[in-house]
Image (cartoon, rainbow, N blue to C red; front, side):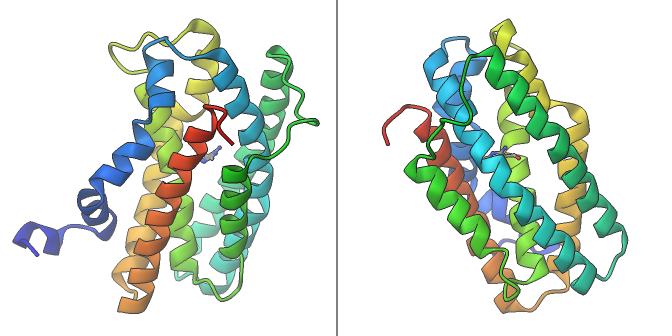
Length: 225
Ligand SMILES: Cc1ncc(CO)c(N)n1
């Protein structure tokens, strides 16, 4: 391993080593098509309905992370950070309902697609008490960071994001959420620094699984089941 990697924090090292996979999740053709204004609105509506189902499954995952933080964390402030994430999700669920009615997407009749079911099943597996807090908080950071990076890119210089999709991009692309993701990354790095080798490799494998599920989730908006 080159010298620089030794001092580098674990997450940064992994993002360098798995840069291609990280880029395929954070610069996906779907979000790039939002950024260049060529997005197919039926793909956007498909994503909206599926993501509402995902966010509903995300709630118990974060609740389980709060419990792991309470039981295992060495730093009480982690609980407040995770609590902040739960509070934001409360607002997020109502945002989805408003946005869905704006696009006449019926959330109640949306059927979860295969990629969504598999991702939600993976989330559920991370809720098990056997899964270490360090592994789960690394997954939480990765899940949030993919959306923050993807949607921030739709708002940065040179973007031609359609006006009616800007609110969606702002939801995850805003600086405040960017700060929140950095806070999560710091928690994950702090925990990883003190973790034994087996936990570190479990966290790395989980990060890669999250990135793969995120790519499949974006692919789903194309409508191939
Ligand atoms: C699929 C997916 N990943 C991440 C996020 C961010 O919370 C989301 N809303 N949906």
